[in-house]
Amino acid sequence: MHQMLPLLIAAIIFAFLAVGAVVFVLCALIPPLRKYSLSAALWCAVWGPCSVAWLILAGLAVVANGFAMQSTRLGHLSLPATPHQLWTGYGVFALICMASLATIAAVVHQWLVHRMTLALFRIYAGLVSAGIGSVFGWTFGFWLATVPEFPFKFVFWILAMLALCGIFGWAALRNARWLRGDAPQSFAWVSPEEFSQTSPEASQ
Image (cartoon, rainbow, N blue to C red; front, top):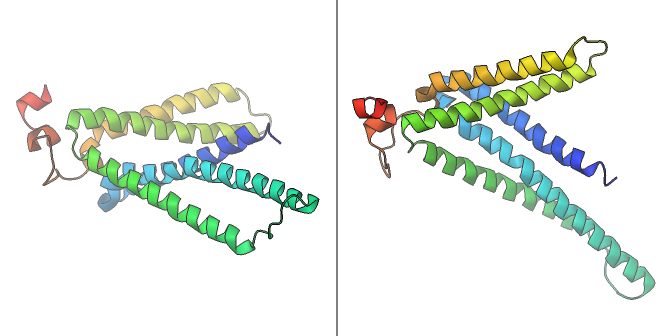
């Protein structure tokens, strides 16, 4: 069982990364939502490690409860059985905490990317988008693994991975202006020219 735990953790994290990648594409295809696409993908991705942390804490709580109940049966302790409502409340509390943490991370991320120069944001958006492309590449690789008698699976997977990373990264570099909207009106530490790269100095 302990050997399956790392695979379970990786599967949970990858599942939320995949959801974030799909959300990124959907937001990027809808003009009013395009400037939130990176932050929306981050909001989904944060749920992965948060869910893993919640499962680990829940597992520790189950183990501790088991030891407590065993001690009760042996007469060392006198504890009531853990009510079902307590576990339900813990689950609801965990969901609220995860949603709050993901929202805070997305809001801070959105605030920060709107205060980068366009040149810096291009690099950031290109790298992150290439990473999102790699998520689709891994998904394609997992699908290939389930297809019997598919020739040169590894070669096709590598080519698909490179192509998806390159396409997503190039698209983000080319359309960086559309991925973050208008310049901020307050608490901005870059000029409008640096934000949109319209001055000769900013374009160098």
